[in-house]
Image (cartoon, rainbow, N blue to C red; front, side, top):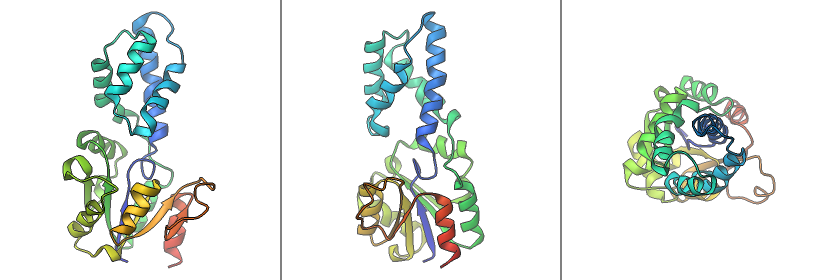
Length: 219
């Protein structure tokens, strides 16, 4: 194995924590702008509507603007998200430490992530991790998205290595683990959900990136 590839959101980027911090800031701003209290349930409702990021924010903000009689239009709220979300991005524990460790070990390092090019690039730069990567494949830019195995094969090709020589780390079982394995890669599933992880096809199951570092120390 000579290449290690990563998902971004909920693998290197603590997206749930980042969304919460952004929403707290937006909630405070909306209350100040409105001069009256917008219920704190605004935050819970946003999280519910966006379905962990799989529903784009234009639909989310259209619903929120109606339900909470917000003082900004859905378009203005979306603009705030697009231009300001990256200011609140936080990395998963041990992400930089693991990337640094892998780099010193001489592995080629790649990223394969679904998402919009501008937002994902801003997230990567906000986290300060771009320099670790030999290739970064973002679905919008590539014109392919997970779980299509072609996006994983494209990453291996840009790294100049065979898929069989790659290990892919991600949190989503179908989009990351099964898809990477269909592309011919090994796959490490980052999950703390013991119920979902009862039986799986992952080559490795880990609950933290630090655990993955331990794996490399023993192989």
